[in-house]
Image 1 (cartoon, protein in one colour):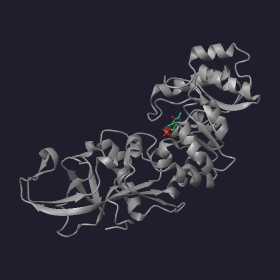
Image 2 (spheres, helix red, strand yellow):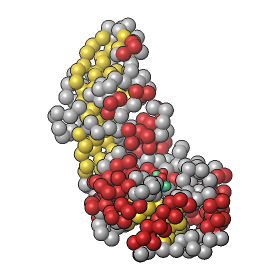
Image 3 (cartoon, helix red, strand yellow):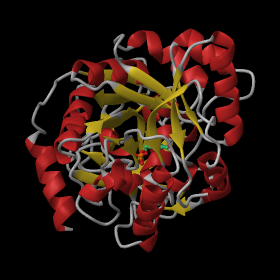
Image 4 (cartoon, helix red, strand yellow):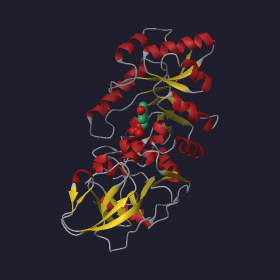
Length: 388
Ligand SMILES: *Cc1c(COP(=O)(O)O)cnc(C)c1O
């Protein structure tokens, strides 16, 4: 039913690097004069930072973010020399010198991290660059108001440091009507007045779509690059990036009343054709999708029936003619007719979690077709999604 590469893999995850690049360009165009970074944490949300980083660098992206130092150490040699790679969590105590050794920039989130970075600058007798993060209403990372007041009164607080960016993070940006967005904007402006003058960054993917007030000098999208919808409930302007296909292993005809799978959580109420496909929760196809999600054979939707097993799902293929689906054929789990956000909602989670859970057991294919147009079928599917 389709052109899957390896016959040995049960399932294939195809990642369209050209679509990721197109999404980055779309976001960059949207923020006008501001710069557009790329967030590559968690292995580029599971899609392969080693492939995504260089593809975006080739398109002109020069600012990258990961969460941990270890992620940065792996990625840094794959990026151009003039690219900046920043670590959102900043240095854990004792790791400061490693940041310098690897040419990686920390985000300093607390007075203690600032002190440690300044102490290292003093020891090395050279100026060290850093990002300073302020908490404007998420209570997760960043300087709080008490720390900001103390810093504003301390003339030597940043001695030896070069503050290259002041940043904060939005808690509710995916809901444009949420009053926390404007409140964070006001607090961000106030916080900047207590800190050394530097370029500023507030918006993640969703923040970009809150409007120009939120763009400042640099935006930091992750999810939207990977095709996730930046605003819940609104049409998704991003290009789809993923196709996940699994192979059918076996097809059987069942009389009415036959229970299927673990716990007998589904039974046929009519004679049924059940296909077993080679993907399960060990691949990140979440167990909560049992009896909820579907797969697609071309344009035909086939419900997943019964529980998701570790390595398999069972599919009600009664809607297809006999022999339309055979062992070795591929069905789509994520693709033209079924985007990640929709599958995530069926699993009771968000696209971010779905993406980052898609495991390492797939055969992964990175496609490079830069700026290719979506196929006709993908476009029709998009129109359907938006219309419905
Ligand atoms: C993860 C993260 C981002 C990217 O967020 P998306 O919603 O995926 O665009 C940006 N900034 C910070 C601080 C983050 O932790």
